[in-house]
Amino acid sequence: MKSRLSIAGIVLLTAVLLFSATARADTRSFVGEIEGNAPEVRLFRWLVDRVSPEAALMVLDGPVEKDGKVRHLYFEAVGPSLDGFKVASVKVETVFNDFGPLEFWGEGGPADIDEIVMGYFDAVITDSDVNDFLNGLVVEDDSGRWEGLSVEFSSSGISAKGYYRMEDPVSMRIKVDLQGELALKEGREIWIDRYVFKINNDDQSSVVEKALRDVQPIVDMEDFVFPVHLKTLDLRKGRMRLATRVIPASFDGISLSYKAR
Image 1 (cartoon, rainbow, N blue to C red):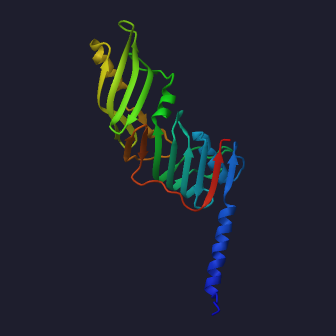
Image 2: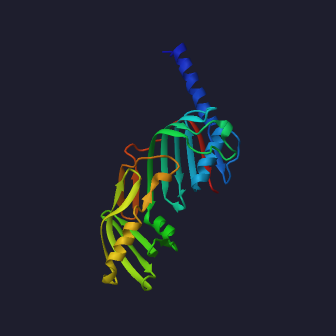
Image 3: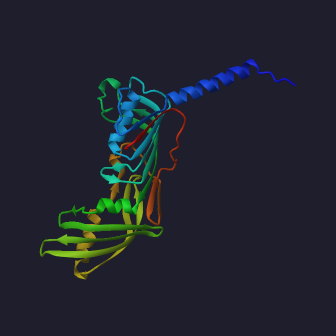
């Protein structure tokens, strides 16, 4: 029996082939440097420059419009740096983005994000990433400074060690061992909660308590590239996951990928 391909079938097959060819043509890869003047390339370069990842992927549902609007955007990065703090991975999906008119963009991309109606976020942070960031870091307050800090994540919470050095009224270096939980507040802040600590000088407990209050929140996502409202803080041995209620998901579209080397 001979099979016959209907006109509708031919049209559908042609559409699929054209879509596949277009999808392949819209994929562009970069290694080391992101070069090009197309708005999509400039936007991708701007995002990569903001977080300095080891690798990244951006997907748009269509070209950037002249007014700088993008209806649907997905961005994921491996080993990005958020304000100098390196994390294992970040995924972001945003809807109805406004980056401002193209005429006001520079070679490096938009000046800022004018508006995002909705954003989804998912990130994994390891305690080794945190400790790399804390290595050599000194955190000062009005009464002294924290130094020699390290942390360890587990399903039950967080363990932290460090020293609090004070100079007034006398010079003193207090060793602090802390056990506690991490809590989300305002959808963007991470606080140490329900904690207990041990120190090598009980007379200075009130000083350490005040110093701990002064460093709260320990993380604030207010200045993150995209506005997000976190819903999940999940701790496991060696890592922490932060996410919005809806998890970001990639989709078919204009794709640009990047590798640092």
